Image (cartoon, rainbow, N blue to C red; front, side, top):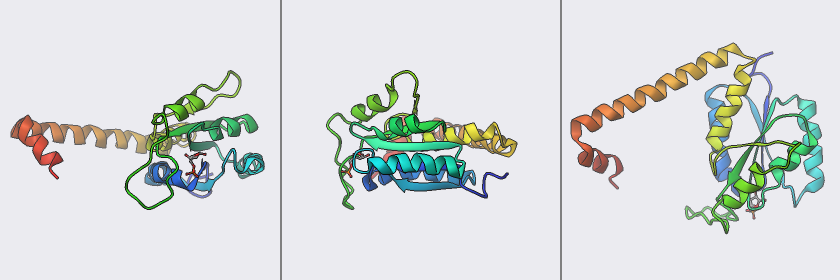
Length: 190
Ligand code: RP5
């Protein structure tokens, strides 16, 4: 079986507004050629659909589910309680803003609400949790899990690390050459 032939990762989120953050999980998987299926499932607005989705995920043979939600963020935990597929939770800070505005509206506790809701699952139904809005890390973590099964992904991950390493060295060389003040004003100039 190849990781690029059929979706091995299910990405779900509680609202269309979460897609502003969750797209980074998809991009990370795309970079490694891993197919994923993306849907909106709301734990509180579509509770029966949540159970249907868990069954669907099992039937499709997803190996990982990435679930993002904001506010009291029940989606990752509830999905985990309905399936044996490992769930990676993404706490979302951007909240309640379905407009196209660049100004994000924040949840009352700036994402801490979602972080605690997702990470503090009681014993028995675990959800691994990435940082607030760190959807890209959820994607990368999924790649790492899949790499246990697909050696080619392990090589791609090693390359990815090398690229990160080189890009820091490049920036450091530039900082050394320009001096810190000039480097920062060049990098962050508006
Ligand atoms: C949660 O409530 C969603 O995950 C989203 O982060 C938040 C707000 O949803 P919308 O009001 O934008 O649909 O269920």
